[in-house]
Length: 512
Image 1 (tube, rainbow, N blue to C red):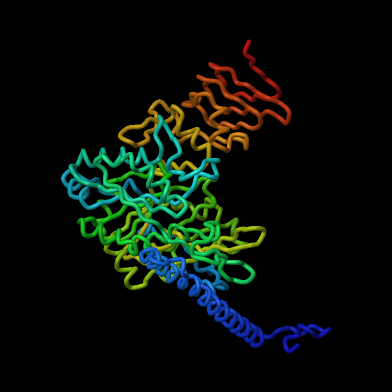
Image 2: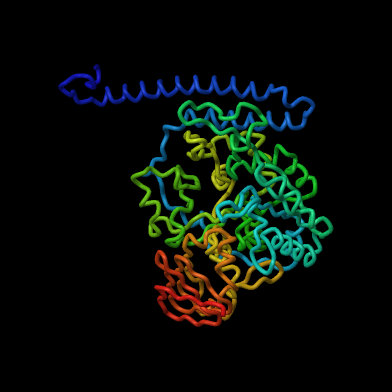
């Protein structure tokens, strides 16, 4: 009533009263935060003291470290959840914070030999192939010429080791979803000349949105009660598992990090040379944004520092501004170069405790739950002399859907030493736009409907929707649209050449 809420006649709030309201609101949030944190601590202690661990000392120690990390994140989430980024303080990054790739000094062969002994490659391998209808780690999906993502990475590293007489190790950061399957898969690389190291990122408890209490009732409860807390967990996990110490002891100084499904993410000596030259502890590869990249995180200047801005952090009324390719011209490829000693420092000094938290809302058994996550790129602001490198689009070739697979498997790309190279016969600088309907979204369905990837060297745009089957040795040029409406079926005969064509209706090819 004091603030005019319960009176019939509304009383305007003065600045003083608004300030009082905000203070009361903050105090209430702090009270509820304290209660939620206290309750969470009690429940986590029950999990940590579980008799289910018995003699599993190592698992118990790992679990305690993970819960310590979760406690810190949960506590910070409770106290910062009402905070919003101040849109007016956001500035485009200055020229010295985004360096064009073409302006980098070229590294000579002698310098490259020195760098090769100091670098290691880390792939973020925590994702499953479920969105493409596959079982198991996404990294084992066959991509091209019978090779999967891991096969291609191994081929790249074998080429580096042979060419430069070095030992560049491959490190895989798995999640509890991919770890066991990955260990089985990498057995085939046992006798290759590539050292493969693996570690698991943390396993955090999901939280009920309404009560802010943990979902799991036991440390060994169903896996769906837990989640991997985003690739921002890389820094704590590589330190806690001892892999960071092992790499430093082996004389490694720099790590190149990327998503395992980005086939354009390969070692670039000019970028690493620039890192050494400038003394940067963290480099993020960004590339020019197109309309298909509008949701990707971007680098900004905020309070005088470089910062990663993700769409989840953007106020609802500013989302369209964030998506603008005129205002925010670049986006994060998630290719990162990081100094290993700097990772050790920021972890031991607790410098990453203020990394931005992303609240990811999902549903479990019909109840809303939340996952607290961080992005690896968000750590950029905590490393010295960090900045972005605006790289060519060719360094960002992710396979997120079967439409991406269609492009990679086509004659548009060839494989050389594990790297994808665009066919020089392509008359245009970039790949065509390919949109495949829901009938093609699962890899199994896609393989049944596409009988040999068409020749698409001169293709600008392709749209396929409905019950469509593509024959072998088909050539597509210009803009091609193939749509089978509900109840219709279209067979594109083997050997067909379609240039600037729209195909619709019914077209059946029957064996006789």
